[in-house]
Length: 115
Image 1 (spheres, rainbow, N blue to C red):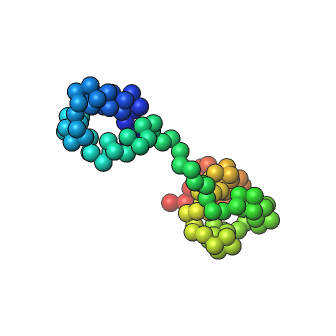
Image 2 (cartoon, one colour; image 1 turned 90 degrees about the vertical axis):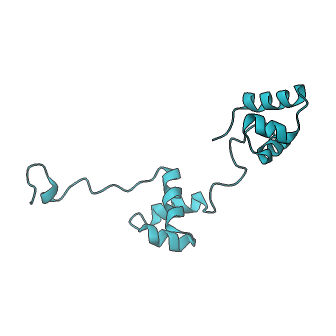
Image 3 (spheres, rainbow, N blue to C red; image 1 turned 180 degrees about the vertical axis):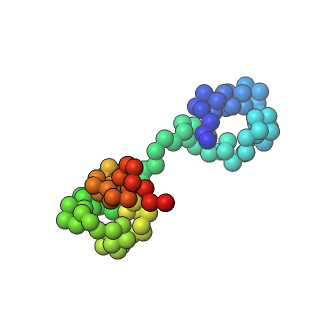
């Protein structure tokens, strides 16, 4: 959990107003001293990372899904050289999910359960 920007600003205003050291400020607000030094470099909380979401080319994955709609996740993972979880989350980002056949088997139809 990140601290709000207003709280961070208040910490540094109090530090300057009372001429506190970093250690005293850390003790007063019960915040690790390392956090205060990090806030000194960048006061605003970071919302997003500057990093690509995946190493999978989404256009190629979409083409692979269109070419091989019945392929298993492990087959897609092997084709792209990544893990199963990477393929799973990439497909999730594309909004692709696999549903069961809409014509359910006889045992799953309403009223005909096998016990």
